Image (tube, rainbow, N blue to C red; front, side, top):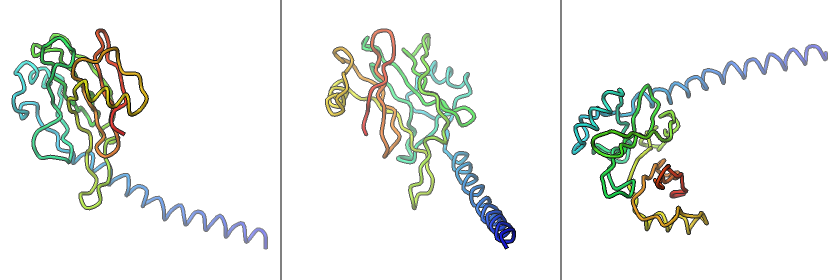
Length: 192
C-alpha cells in the first residue's frame, strides 16, 4: 500500500511538472517575442543628431530602442551633461538585445563613456491591454531636480550640482541619475 501511494505521488508530481512546463516555456516565448518586437531605430532616424554621433553609433552597430510611451523617435538626448558649457549627447545603444548608455562628451565624439549595460529584456513589462512593452527611457534633468531627489531620499547630492544630468528611467518603476562630477559618473537615486 505504501509503495502504491508513493508511486501515485511520484506520478502525480510528474504529471503536474509536465503540465506546467509547456506553460513556463510558453511564457518565456511570449517575453522573447516581446523583446524581438521592440522597435529599434537606425541612428540616422533620430532628428537633429550630429553626423559624427550618428556615424559613431552606426560604427558600433547600434540601434536605438524605443519605449512604448511615444511614437516620436527618442532615447537620444543632449545637454550640458559635463558642466563645461558644451553639448554632450547620450543614447541607448542596443546590440543583440543588450543596451548600453553611450555618452558622447561632445559632437566630435572624441570621448565616449559607456554606462549601465543591461539586457533589453530587463526593461520589458506587461502593461495589460498594451501587452508586454519596452519601458526604458533617457531624459535630461537639471540641477534643481538632483537637489530635490537627494532631499527626498536622504542621499547626499554631489558637491554643488550645477549642471544637467542624465536620467535613466524604467517607466512606471523608478530611475537612476547619472551625474558627471569632474572625473567620473556618479550614480544617484532618481524617481522611485
